[in-house]
Length: 172
Image (cartoon, rainbow, N blue to C red; front, side):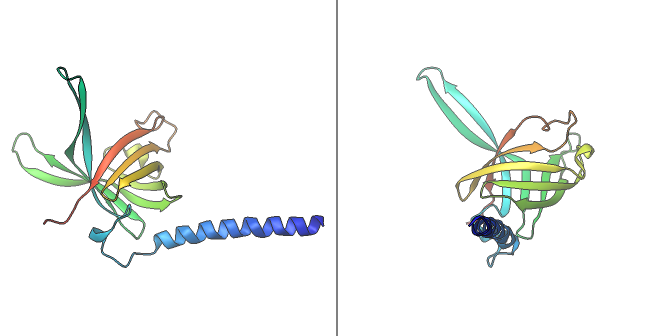
């Protein structure tokens, strides 16, 4: 009886592990639709700045989202990159720079691990992981919290940081 119970426990554990592994491998398979038509985390995203305004007269609080010049592309093949449009104050010229890039793996429905290959503005992050918890209140919005997997005093390494991203949509 003990052997049968142990065998059943082993089979249940193996099935759980294989179903989790199967889900991760399914997530890595490119989708049959174009990146722009995605309704999940895959896509081109623009970071939003959240402003909270308090109306003194009515004692009402308003939250607005203001687009920033930072974009993130999450591709179905497991790669991602973060870029920013920067403006030269002296000349007024605009240029787009890739800030960092790497690979990602989905851990659950709401967690991904980004492996940073190269980070321009914080080179201490090169080769490290960033842990990202996210939710999608709708198919065009991601609210995420990230934390870098480094043990130094690098900004973002000791606390969860919140960001809001909106999907860049096709012109209509």
